[in-house]
Length: 358
Image (cartoon, rainbow, N blue to C red; front, side):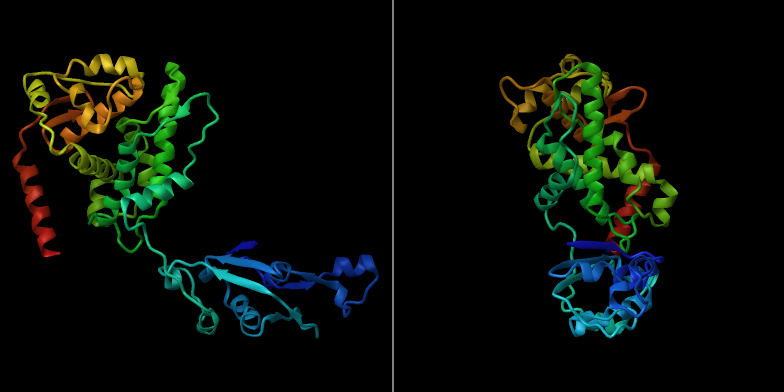
């Protein structure tokens, strides 16, 4: 298997081959001798697969040079009367948007390509999670063992699904699967950092670790005008909040959280640092009336790692915040819900009317 990234500086010699004057000089050969040929990547891929990535970036004259191998199955190098019958499978990759944006696949070459296979984003959350788990760097060299809760995996994957539907994000550029992959890696890295600082044995990501992975999200989003006005970081935070709300509703939508909400309405506040270890976090979470009693609805029962308890509790708190049952700010953490201002109501009404128009 041979692979080549198409860049503007790629030459015919790189792909097919050329005369090698140094070889001729060392061997005492005439330039007309076939032994002076330096074979490119394509002839060297005989009886294998040769892939060219980002085909539109390949110069037109090099695309023309591929005609013969696709049509006749052989290649001619630099005008030599030598035909090399090749047994090779050619594979090309390209983004359809790049056909006109950066380059072009010339029509005769496209006509010679046997099949054009259009890929798509994962259709289901489960499919996306499988890809993310396969591609993300999760096997760390630290002494801790990574243990990622299922709801954290789903929240991270849901961020990509929400981004693909968000009106503030350019649909033509899209949101690739790299977003949840890098978001997962950054979230695990932040959890690993906490485990190293606190001496925890297991690396268990929390919702706060996903917020720490915002730089992995903002770089993957091409914003429309409205998104540019709000800012990439604000859009990313909105995506996380909505995604948490979706997963919270999926697993805990039927659960009565009124005692928890009442505790905050009575003046209770809770602020948990992402650097607190599991036991310290649980001591803070126990202050909230009835919160830990609802862990059973996430399948957390009996003797469970404190880090898992803290992660599940953060999901519940952030879910209540996403559904506007409670509020949260940087200074005081979680507290009672704030009454929406006329401006917030106006924005919500505007979004609903725009959604109906679309």
